[in-house]
Length: 197
Image 1 (cartoon, rainbow, N blue to C red):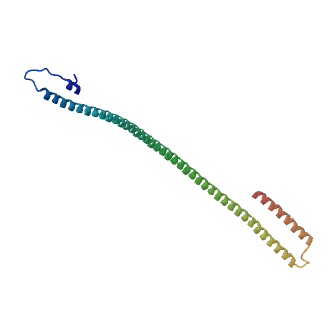
Image 2 (cartoon, rainbow, N blue to C red):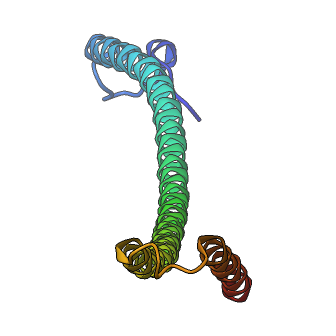
Image 3 (cartoon, rainbow, N blue to C red):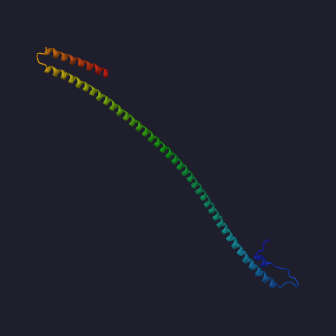
């Protein structure tokens, strides 16, 4: 059973012959009641403070949980961001490596093509020079042959001119002979040209 200050004040004791002094007992009970009232008030104040403190503790706990959740979420986001950034960087590096390989392969092919073109041009130039030289040499041979035949003809002609007129039997026959030789020479040249072709 719970005793209140009012219970103490109203408490009555049985009277006995050599009992306690009523006035002293009442004074003591009043003092105990007052102290008990003070203690009850303090207890109530402590209980109210305790409720407030519990509310604050509950508030701080919720805040702590919210902060913890926020930190966890931020950590997760940071981890995801790092993971995505690492994957993206890896993809970029792979693409860059592939692209550089493609560029190198294309450059190598271009170099091979240019080298092949240069070889082809050198071969064409050498062939042209050889053909042109052959053509010049053929014309030089024809020219030398013409010069030699011309010298022979001039020598024969000079000999005829130096002869006295009485030794030259028939100038018309001599002219016909020269003409015939010239025709034969033209036919020979024609045949030699066909053979060369």
